Length: 199
Image (cartoon, rainbow, N blue to C red; front, side, top):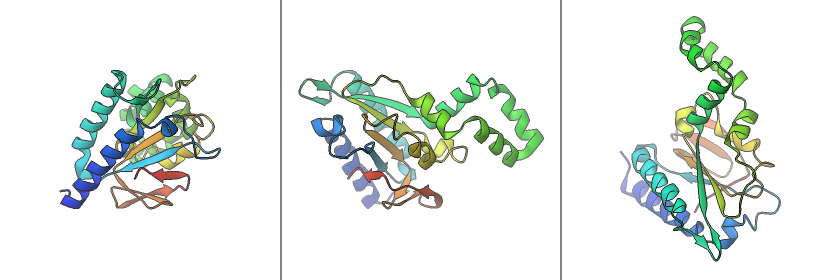
């Protein structure tokens, strides 16, 4: 169960994201040099239902033109990593065979097989909707659902060139200390140094 401090932190992050969706520099991905603007929205995993509700509202509100700056409207495009995984497996025509493969090869064998098919590069290709438009913002969700089949830092490392013009917000049920991601605050998810905490 989330503590009052964790709930307060979550509320501040929600407020910060809404504020950024109304900020011209954020929407234009300015002020970050040649790096893709990648921001972590970390939250306590017990707040997952509240996080899903919030992100659903943000996406819906952006579609109705609620956010933006000047003539540029924010367009939040959500990509759930677990849904992306399923779409990759379906496009490779192996989705129906995965349960049988787990029985035959075990969990470790299935993990290796899925990671051969759904590479970080395949995730980036499936996530992208090029050409991007001014005001587009990528929201990555489903990080915990897709673990351990994919680790989010591997996807982020491969999206630098594809999303140089689009700010990326990673909904992360865990912690980020500026160098390391820790899923659920317990599992080491990998090192990543190019992201900025949302607040």
